[in-house]
Amino acid sequence: MKFEDHFALSQLYASYASIVDAADWDAWCELFTEECSYRLVPRENFERGLPLATLSFESKGMLKDRAHAIRETLFHDPYYQRHIVGAPRVLRVEGETIHCEANYAVFRTKLSELTTVFNVGRYLDAVVRTPGGLKFASRQCIYDSELIPNSIIYPI
Amino acid sequence: VPEPWWGGPTAVMTTLFPSVVLQQQVNSVSTRHIQPDGFGAFNFEWTHFGFEDDDAAMTQRRLRQANLFGPAGFVSADDGEVIEHSQSAFESKPFHRALAELGGREVGDTDHMVTETLIRGMYRYWREVMEAP
Image (spheres, each protein chain N blue to C red):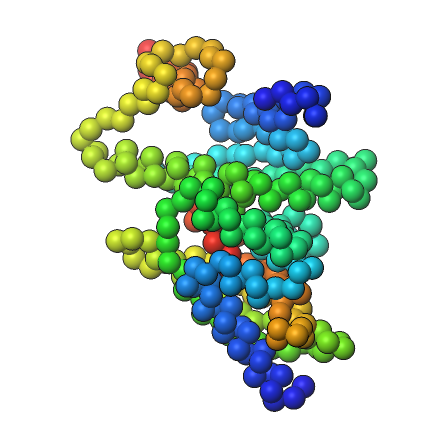
C-alpha cells in the first residue's frame, strides 16, 4: 500500500469521527457508497455467527432514512457523542477494496450530566476507491458494550 | 390494528404479568423481558425469533424488520427515551406522587390508545398481589 493511500484512509477515519461527533448526518451518509452496508452488531452475535444486528442498513437510502428519523421522528434526549478512533489497521487489499479495522470508544454527554463511556468496540470495514475519494462499502461496528444505556439514536 | 393488505392485525402485543411482552409486528416476532436490577434500574432483554422452516427470504425479511425494534430501533428507541424522561420527572420531587391520569382514574377497555388505563390496571393488580391484606 502506498503512503498516499494510507494517508487517505486515515483521513477517511478521522472525517467519519469528526462528522458523527458534529451530528452532520447528511455528511455521514455521503461517506458511504450507494450500495453499502452499515451494521451495529453486538460482539457476541458477531463471534457466534448469529445474523441479528442492532441496526443493519443495506443501502445509502437506508442511511438517509436514519438521518431523517434522527431529525424528524425519533423523539429523544439529545446528547453529544465523542469518538476516539484508533489508527486503521489494514488487513488486506483486494483490487480496489481495502479491508481494514480500528478500535473505537464513544463517550456520551447529556445536558448537565457527567460524560460516560457509551459504546466501545471495533470497526470492521471495506473501503473502496471512488471518483469522490475513498468511501465505505461496508462498516460494521462490533461493540463489546452489550448492555446499552437505554438507547442508541445516532450512528456509532 | 387490522390492515387489509395483511389480512389481520399487523401489531399484536400480549403482556404477561409482570415482566414479559410477547410482540408480533408484521413478520417480526420478539419478546421483551424486564429483568429488575436493583432499586431504580432494570435490564430490558430483547429476543427475536425466526423459525426452522423459514426460507432465506423470510429470514432476511425478519432481520430487516428487526431495524424497527430493540434499543436503536426506528419505532422502539424512543419508547425507552420517553420512559426515561418519565422516570426522571417522577424522581424529581421524591416527596410528591406521580399520577397516570390520562383517560381518567379508572381501569377498563377502550377502543383507542390515548389512555393510561393499562398502567393503572397493571399497578392495581400489582398492589392486589404484592400488598399484605
